[in-house]
Each structure stands twice: as structure tokens, then as C-alpha cells.
Image (cartoon, rainbow, N blue to C red):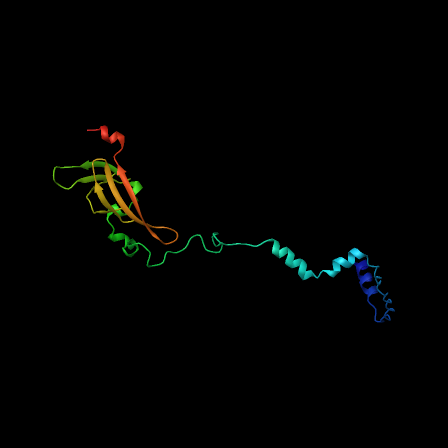
Length: 183
């Protein structure tokens, strides 16, 4: 096997160079003979392509009036002037009532005593109770308690929407029906 491969390797190498072969002649390319034009073909070529392009562009026009800009991001940062005042307050300086969302509070009791200011008791999701009065800050959006009545507690919150405008949201915490029957 080794002898066979050596003989093939040695036999294929030679010191004599073979003269290069005669190159093939290049054949001429086929030339297309123009056909006779028909009257229909003349009409097509008579209309310049720019006129055809104008016809198709005149068929459709886009009117962006009343449509949102597709290149405006859906989530935008609120400018510093429009942000709520809570952003300036560190988390450690917030009261426990400001660390929860309003939906996480449950109104447990309303205390109405003669001529004194009405108070109420709310419970957070952990089960801790807090006594609240009119004017106190409550909720993550710095809601202000506007009114405490026999039917519930009215809270006004300032919220900022996606356009950056500030809106006032009024929320009412009511005592649940099961709590009304208990003594």
C-alpha cells in the first residue's frame, strides 16, 4: 500500500513542463433583431413613465389629521415640572398610610362623637389599624382625606396621566355590609 502511494506521488511529479494548450476561441454573442412595432406598442411607449407614476400617486393621498403619530413612544417620561411632590420625599420619611395604595385599605370603623371632629379607622393588608382624620395624607399618590361621614371616607388624589396632565381622582372607602351588622 505504501509502495503504491509512493509510486503515484513520484510518477505525477516531473521536471518537464508541458506547453500550454491553445485557448478556445470566444464565440460571438447572439444579437437580438428588433421586431416590427405594432400600433399598440407605439401607444405604450408614447406615454412617458413619469406620467404613469403621477397617475398612481394621485389615486391615494394620506391625511394624518386626527391620527396619532406612530413614532411617539407609548411610555414617556413625565417632565420634572409635572411630577408629583412625592418623588422628592424619600421612602423613609413616608408615614405607614402613604406606603400602601388606597385599594389595599379596608375601612373598619367610623367614629362620630357629638361636636368633635369625625374620625375613622382603616386597616392595611397586614392587619394593622390606623386612626384617620380630615386633612391627613393617605395612599401612594398623597391622597388627602376630604370628608368623613356616616357612609364612608372621601379621599382626593392627584394623578398624572400618560400625556403629563394632572387630574384629580376622588375615591370613597365604604364600610362593607358584614361590618355594618356587627356590634
